[in-house]
Length: 242
Image 1 (cartoon, rainbow, N blue to C red):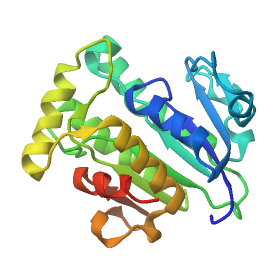
Image 2: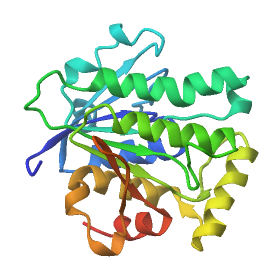
Image 3: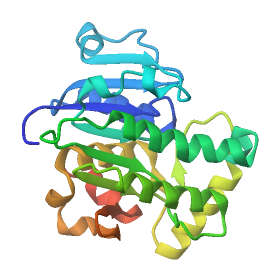
């Protein structure tokens, strides 16, 4: 993927997503950017060059067959979509939004052309584990595994710690608590959201095999569904690379 790439972002109105979208639109490495979601960002005050690079579409995650996600033939799919049980309203709704929506949308965005090598980059959570007793962390871990099994050429997952400068209107207490678990066990500091977004962009641009050794990426998953994990410290390192 050395040539200019196309990028799809799901979750662009969230804390990390809005910074990632802005950086994608400013990056010369991405010639076309798609923002698909339940709502999309305002283009008020944006330059015409930015507007012409961006394709926006409001979609219904319950009707992904009508979304047109597959038609974009995206080179890199960025997913910063997620929620909490409190915001979702129930455990069932949380599972549907946090995992099913993410996995189903990624599946829909996958090209039918076997010659088209696509990369997927997912922002998960520090401490994510499919066997975790914490529903939030278990959902993230199960989502990672499901994404890795979709058959993308390259799957990259971020495990950030507590996110700083999120500019959220609500206080995600549960997310903060489990995030601090990841920070305490890893020994690293909280993550600045703009820096996380930059590292996510760089991961999508470079791919797993071009990550530098200091990033400290590791491999997880089973045969046929391997994926690369970048931790809190690695995200900081990767954010500094051009």
